[in-house]
Image: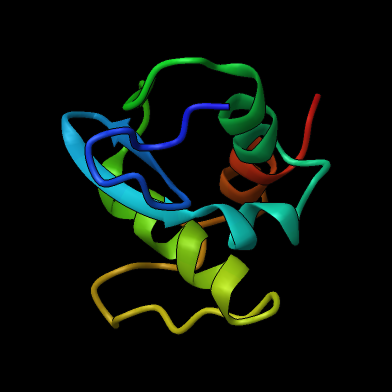
Length: 93
């Protein structure tokens, strides 16, 4: 598991397109069949690099934190955060 050793906390850091996101292990445990959980539990180093849009990743985390709901700002279209976005990060393919 790629737990943050510097803080000895139960978090993992994802480096998404150069932006770092610290995510609680408990959040990922709530979504065990996702790409994010798989990477967090399989990788041994943190941060875990994901070559994706960091702004959209933030919405993905909001989706997970808010039980499948997310509020998008007017500047982001639903198409921009389509089901494909969630699929790439949330579900193994």
